[in-house]
Length: 498
Image 1 (cartoon, rainbow, N blue to C red):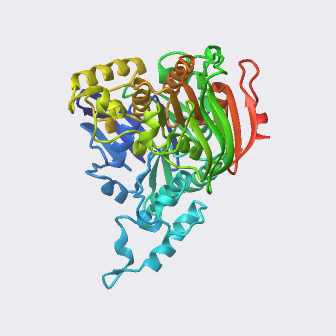
Image 2 (cartoon, one colour):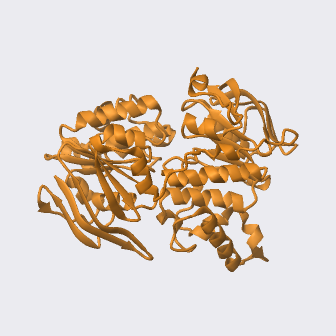
């Protein structure tokens, strides 16, 4: 149904796709895996029309096509659900769903908002999302926005006569288990008239959903595996280029923390509508993980400690000093670093290059009388590019052009290179491949061993258990249980969910 033959794509200093062959059969779900920087996102954008290939051929039902932009791809039945989302957050849900296709609701030169809302409800029903179509998109949770993104793509059903090809770029990265199961049911139901390309770093999900799996490394397809011939270890080896360390979470490197040195203390802290009466101490060298379902208050606690949200009651103490002014600037001044979940929105600055992003929180260290010492900025960036294994042609590369995993490494390097000794990690491995996750785990152990206090909201319960000295379980904004994570005596998944 859909095929790429010998497709090439170059960027300055990077050969992103190298003679890639890729095909999708009618009604098929094709998995696509590889490390960050392997070329998966570039391939998806070529398919979707965001990038034009430098060489090769693309056909749909045997007819050669070439898309100059995503609109042309959509008009041929190709839609994409983006990992970082393409919704415009200050528009309503229904405006986002029909963005660019509002003309169907125009009556005598005026948009019929009632008709648009009704049509939007029909699309939202496809993804089992019961919300007001007039809701401003920024008010939705990340998981809700992801489902709206899928509903937007599914409008192609009504606009296109032929079969669809829907690209799913990390669609499950922050969805709860029941939301993932719902998405998979929707996808399977839609294979009656749509084919899917499913990109995910969660191999268990790829194995569960896909009929075939393409494995990419360094811009090339290195293997194509049928569902009934899948060997997880072999796939991981081909993705990473080596055997994955069985000591995945580096538990043998977990050192005892300094019980005498409290770096962050919360006492009966509440934030209206988010969490209530939360108390805990974070010690130097401790990895403290907040565990709970979406909306349990985990992320809001991180934002409060950093200073982005001011608590409605209670006290926050950092390094023995009670916080009276809550702002990001005050958090940075106190040596607090924050790695947010939504890295493209809050973690990096698109348009600035790697070294500018990396030194953004420590500009005062590189300025004399208001003049920046750019050479020193670049030297620091080169050091951390090597240390973190960041895949970039140079420190001058626009950070927005890096893969998601490499952007995350830049954010981590920004805080660590600036000397932050309290680090807040909100889903730091979300959307990262196995190799990049190992790099993050190694850095968590390194920071902990150096006395950095870390508050972590993990991507999975296994990750929480593997990395943490201490686990606090939250439900509906209220503290439930505390577990110690001593190596060799860590709590089980059963302990955490019961």
